Amino acid sequence: MASAAPKAPPLPLLRALAWFRDGLAALHRRMVPGHIALLELSTIGYLTQATCAAAELGIADALADGPRQPADLARAVGADADALRRLMRLLVSGGVFAQRRDGSYQLTAISQSLRGDAAVSLRDLFLLLGNDLHRRTWTHLTDSVRHGRSQWPELAGMGFFEYAEQHPEVGEVFDRAMTSVSSLASEPLQAAYDFGHFASIVDIGGGRGSLLVDILERHPSLRGTVFDLPRVVESLPEQLLGPGLTGRLTFESGSFFDSVPKGSDAYLLKHIVHDWGDEDAERILRTVRTAMEAEARLLIIEIVMPEHHRPHPGKVIDLEMLVNTQGGRERTQTEFGNLLSRSGFVLTRVVHTAAPDCVIEAHPAW
Ligand SMILES: C[S@@+](CC[C@H](N)C(=O)[O-])C[C@H]1O[C@@H](n2cnc3c(N)ncnc32)[C@H](O)[C@@H]1O
Figure 1 (cartoon, rainbow, N blue to C red):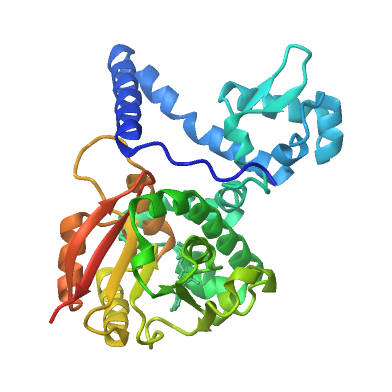
Figure 2 (cartoon, rainbow, N blue to C red; figure 1 turned 30 degrees about the horizontal axis):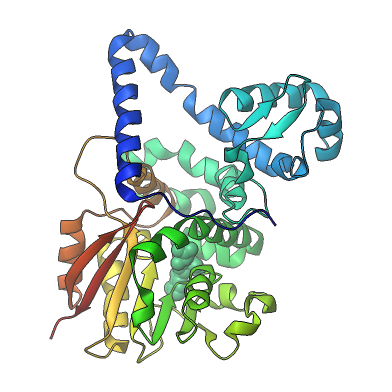
């Protein structure tokens, strides 16, 4: 296992670095002729796909014990030596891997996180991004924009969650990718928000439970329940319930459109609301509201879409929702406030974290 999850840098520092990076990029775009800036845009996606290939080949894992010569690496990952050298040339130019003077390849801080055993591993996210079906939904972005909806029904005859239910291998890739993204957000979320002042938390649509496990490990008196579809909850490995969690962590299955566990202090919904359009999101929130006591808190963990024109991950993920979900979208703070009040809640505060996610806290309207 690689070293423990690194502490997130302070939010103001991250904001200053992003502001500086975006400013330099904007300056560059203004200085070069328009067609050059456009040509540069055409190459961005290739580095992502090359990183996906590196994840699939397991290159970062093969370099975990130290640098390797190209031929040795090609043998280890089962690749054609010349083609691998060409893949690595692009990835080295993008800083994903490094090449030493003796020709061997080694990990950089970036590719450390592509290892399957890294404390914050994004390997499974890249396996999802490179997945053929996922790629196809983006190929149909134009149709999604034209018709205002995902093309999943046209491509697969059903929506994504239904498809994942019927194709466990796809569901598995998705669940692992979500766990991967959660590992990224866990530390910043816990640094910014004190989950320890609750006695019990239900994680609605909690997937494989990784965030709740992290929270319970940090707060030994807290109890928690992961609630998700039967497909997800019933396939969870036993070892998730480490010794310190026995009796404190339970799993329940069902649909958040029907009912969710009652009587918990806090109801956490991470990356759930953005999967759905306003009508469905309201139905989910009303189901949660019905299960809550008046003093309980709702904690929605999502990106809050900024109103500025600078780059922000939410702008990409919003389109990810357009092409992959039936009505899902990222929302501004005002949109969250409106959705919450229509669903019987009052938004109390929005806590920003060093990750793109915020904690949107609400209580039931009296
Ligand atoms: C985008 S994932 C988020 C998972 C997890 N909260 C996280 O942030 O990693 C959405 C989750 O909602 C679950 N889900 C979808 N439809 C559901 C339903 N009707 N009832 C309960 N869970 C559902 C999925 O199985 C999946 O785990």
